[in-house]
Amino acid sequence: MNAETFPKVAPKQVVVIQAEHATGILLDQHFKHYKGHDGQEKYRVFDSLEMANAYIDKLKADLNLEFVVYNYKQEVICKINM
Image (cartoon, rainbow, N blue to C red; front, side):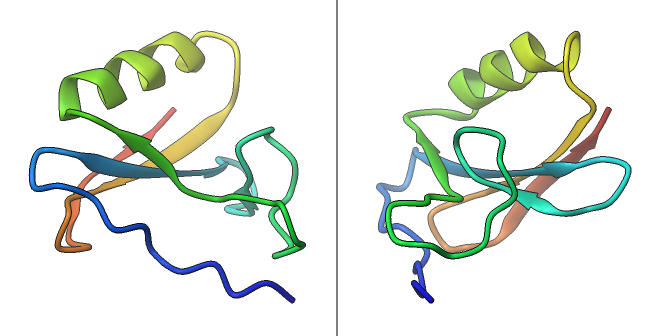
């Protein structure tokens, strides 16, 4: 199993993970269940919180997801449930 580590990001960047709202199952960047396989990525890096929010806003109309947004210190900035 691939032990993907938290990405190193600059202070203004943020990291987003996404999960199914109904089950809480973590999803990869292609919206498939994250199982830690090689090539599977669970983190999305954005240059700003505004860019991450735009991504989340675009998805919330079509998908039943929840998101957790982290800062560069790996601290939770916010949790968004759809």
